[in-house]
Structure formats: structure tokens, C-alpha cells
Length: 113
Length: 112
Image (cartoon, each protein chain N blue to C red):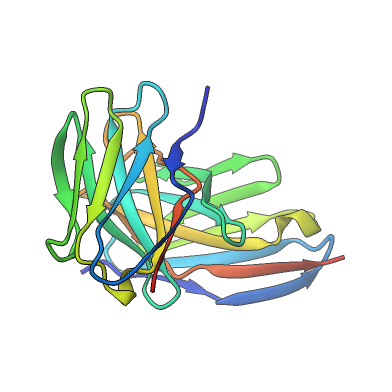
């Protein structure tokens, strides 16, 4: 069974631009969660989607948004990029809810210049 | 507010030793606790998941225990190998909200 895939793996953007990251969960998994990892703040929860609906949201500004499609694939979008948005963005999928075991993708390394 | 702490932040031991990594959490109302490893620049690999009703889980040389009443979990690694070198993170899910709350991790170095 294929694991969680994330594209692109690396991304370089400049301040003010916007970016879209993609995540394909493990087949059959309907819950997708997104996390941001930085050296200073560690891992922080962004949001969780289940059946195309956002169920949980972390404490991030509205510039961070996401969506989930009918095939459970998910995208997250960051608008008006800031230098502090440079991070590793990780996507995780789980079978029912994110309370069950979560499986992570390799992440997208975003650098904002 | 749930807070997760991992001590020590870094640990270096010779190959072959048994070792214990610690994770503590402030709110015992957790749904489950999960241990992960992260290799430099990589994503997270799930190691063990302990449901709130369980006391421990084992996988190969790894054993994780959970004591909800004291707000503690330990990850025991037997007969450590250089390939075990990585950052180990623990995370809990809250009772009313399934998002993962993370510790800062323990960076483990196994010296050959």
C-alpha cells in the first residue's frame, strides 16, 4: 500500500507570493491533517479535514487555508507569504479520525526569501 | 491547556546500551499517545500508538508505556544501534479534539 505523498518536496518563494501544497493520503484514509514544523516552534497543528469538511483548526492566521477533495486528497494554501512561513509542512492521514494512528508524508520544505 | 515535555533534549550513548526516553503531559484527559521518529530533513515515522485504555505497546526492540495518572510515557529502546540515531517525538491527542499536541523531541545519537 502506498504511503502518504506530498508535492512538491521543495519550494522557494518570495515574500508576498502565495503557495499551494498538495497531499495524497493512504488509500482508504479519509482524515487528513496538516502540521507546520519550524526550529523555533516545533510541530504545530494547522487543520484537519474529513470528508471534504474542515473539522479542526489550529491557531494560525487566515492566510493559511486548506481544502479536501472527494478522493480525500488535500491541498493547503498560504497567501501573502512572510519570511516566518519558511518551514517543513507535513501532512498526515488516518483511517477514521485524527485520533487514531496518523501516518505522515515526507513533507514539503518551503523557503520564503 | 495541554503541554507535552520531553526530557532530555539530547542523548548520546554507546551502541548496544538499553535506553529510556521520557515524555510527560499536563492533562491526563488524552485519547491516545503516539511515538514517532524523525530523521534529519525527513518526515515522521510512526513507531508506537498507545490508546488511553492501554498501559504499553511493543514493537521489536521498542516498548512504550503509558501512565495517565502521572502524565508520563516512556519509550524503551533495547540494544541500541547506530541506525536508531534520530529525533524521537511524542504526541498526544486531546479528549475532545483529535489534533496532535507535540513534545519538542529528544535527539538521540548512538555512537558505534
